[in-house]
Length: 269
Image (cartoon, one colour):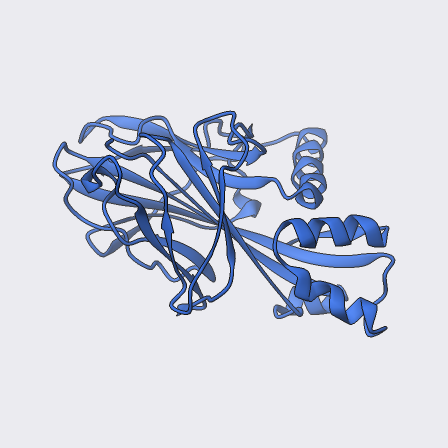
């Protein structure tokens, strides 16, 4: 069992970093592990594709799953496990590991902090209600939840594929990462409630310790081409912000609710 002080510290870190638009992502020990060999998948939160490692906390994990060949397997860690997950893949083909967090909340005390955050993330529509007087400019409350995925390939041959897993918001790879040629872009699609999300900004990070190198908006089919930048690893991040939808966000009088999608993968070339 986690000590109360430790749990409070971890919750505080997750809460306070949201306003800085830090990415939450899954980072496998290896993107190409051998079949039958256990490997770790770390939960990370931070900037420059170099986030702090977070432990597995059951209360944070609404969904924690492994998808392969169209089949879903629930995977869980123990409270405090670090790395968060240990997985043993069987057979060959592409595996998708997914995570859905609970809803958390942050209050922006000043208009400038909220304005800077949503402008930076391509969420300018969130400014209009406050500018028109329908929302305040001080103490704006946002509820947010995270939806992360990583792609792990078993076997040298690029078999299998990524697929929608029913997350609220989800980045889906439309090609096998190891099948891409050196200059091929990675085609992806952003889905929200199972439908293509047009006009969303995808931030692209290539290599650990780097700032984002591309900002690409999705087309009317929710699709985008992620430029090649070497083997990687790659981190894609996208945010969609709406008026409060969930009962928890409404009960806590949030002004906005946001849904964060991330995808990590490594190319063969």
